[in-house]
Image (cartoon, rainbow, N blue to C red; front, side, top):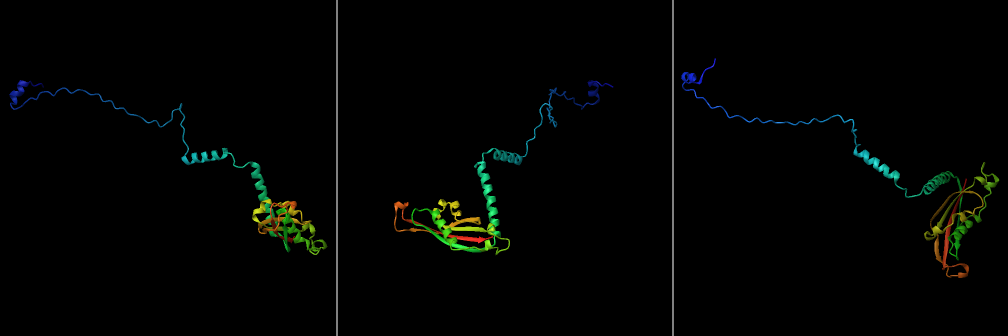
Length: 216
């Protein structure tokens, strides 16, 4: 039921009417929300990077496979062949049954040829020995074909690079040389005279010691 303002003042004398509130401006607030897409777009394939350690390993392997070798292949092949030969010789030397040892000394007074001194040392070691046991069958099942030799030379260090091992080995008429070792030894002394007519460059005299191990 509608009641007029006049009737309200009359009925309630202490009633005070408040003015209407001012009109509030309406504000439109737009809230932007973003939605994370959890599925890759079909037009842009998703790429997953490998872990850091996998990338580093792949980079390291690639750099090794494409980097040039510091040595040519023939050198590596030759080195492996030499290592295999050395292992065979070491096995034969360790399994050789030693019979006796011959020792000698060689000199080169003129010409300063260390190979000549080494050959004379080996010849001196074997020239005063006779080995009939290998030819007469004194050792059952063993003859000169089974004879094995180990050569050890004491050579002055400053001349070792000049030594011709093949010329030294030619001194031995029979027997298989299973090892050839050169160690520091021998001597360089003065012969007291320099004879240019004999090929001397100075008065040095080369001395070499030899030990020949004979077995089977």
